Image (tube, rainbow, N blue to C red; front, top):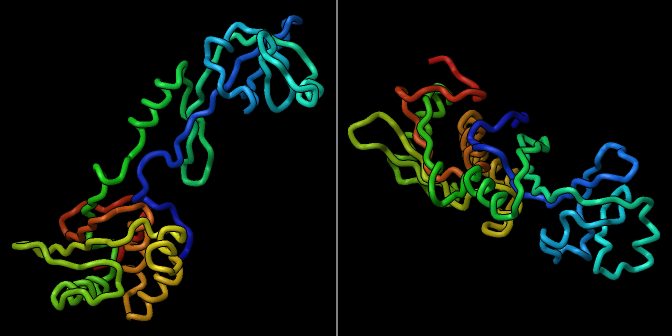
Length: 237
């Protein structure tokens, strides 16, 4: 399957925050941003902001009221003053790191991440998309699976929607990442896709099912009246 943007992935991925310090120097040079050294990670913000520090290229160390090992002190070239503590929220946007924003407390950063995260198990696990995203052959293949009760080994169950020509799929053991599939099924995502192709599954159907499962979608419905989804291939009727 050729590499493509996965339109089933919602929002930013791998959201997290990093506590960073805005530090100024006595010579009025531009402020710098540094993380606190891990050995001082236990310090609350109240013991960091407006306190003097030692600074190097990779981290900062609070000096007032703190014992600093010589091995760390020797790595620091300058003195500074922590003006403020910022919690930088960052994430992943289709493989590219992105800075989402800054917060001024741990609680605020955690709330931003909670609001931006699509926590699976609560919502956004059911999608309805147009049948134009799979070939006619693929739709008939799916219909046959729905009519005969999907055999074991597919890691999904196909079903018909009553009083509708639409067909749905209940995906199992998602997300279909190598890590999760190896843990649950003992196979990789590539091996599972190859198994599907060996069962004569049309490639257009295999592609779209695996994209959806990779994004941890659990219910996928194909309906001719549903809208097309951007960034997915479309096939002529």
